[in-house]
Image (cartoon, rainbow, N blue to C red; front, side, top):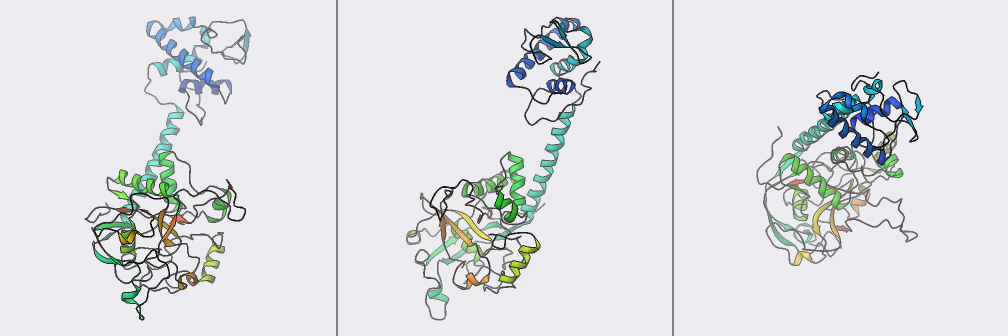
Length: 415
């Protein structure tokens, strides 16, 4: 006879009554349809009611009337020895051990069963990961004192020939911007970071299609995200930390990349692109990708391989575009307010900053400068550029990443 809740409860992917899991283990079954689950819940309730009156009354439960049978057909009832006897409609007294867990559940027994322990351990594991991520997030925040700067292509003020640095028109109309102080993440969000968030919130992990998972998805590489995924992650972190966290505004991003608005053409330790020292050099990138079994053209290799900017920010001009809050408008700079601009009220595409640079050569052509504006649909369609047809297997967000900010005018200290 099985004692109350003494059987080992099998792990289940979907919730089911604890006592039901015990009975399933006793019967050697792994699956149960929804009708049987509901029937078992009714049986549990009746067992609890009868037990509260008199334990022997449990014998009077008719399994078939409750829609629950211990064998595969309605004509059989399983006894405590594991055999099926034709025609038995009542629970044999000797089989009470099998249903003892019903009473325990109904009476809310204090002793947790094995499935509860497994669930608890899993929850504790997730909580530990979340705590580690929050500690890491606080540790990697860099305080950026607010101030004023001239936003846009500052070539006419800084270049030797007093000409623009880029041929793009959407970064022209140099205009004054004044920002409050804020803090910014030193690194883009990695796959490892975002996986913790996915586990904690019950969402599917990003970048799990075959190509990304096998050749691009290094834990310490920048996670490929849609705009909403990027913003949800930052706001979730803020909720956990009780801080006003979000994606940066376009103005905040440029101000930080330019070392508080200075004339930094590139967001490196010295404002210059020096392949092999402060950005990837082609052969160097190839070797690193081979060593880590990654695709040499991956949008991001593991982050933090080069010196940070003077403000302590890594990879601001390489290893993936970064989403910002603003909607894209090529003419926005002509109407942008001076104080804490947040972009147009609406639009079809979002602004991207940074660059999906593979090596320093593309940067020397004028891409990835601190004032370069890119833009993309926040949830781009999976369109094959060659066939011009939708391809559900494509991942359109491998090269679009995120970096969070804290919109608070005082430094945020790690515990």
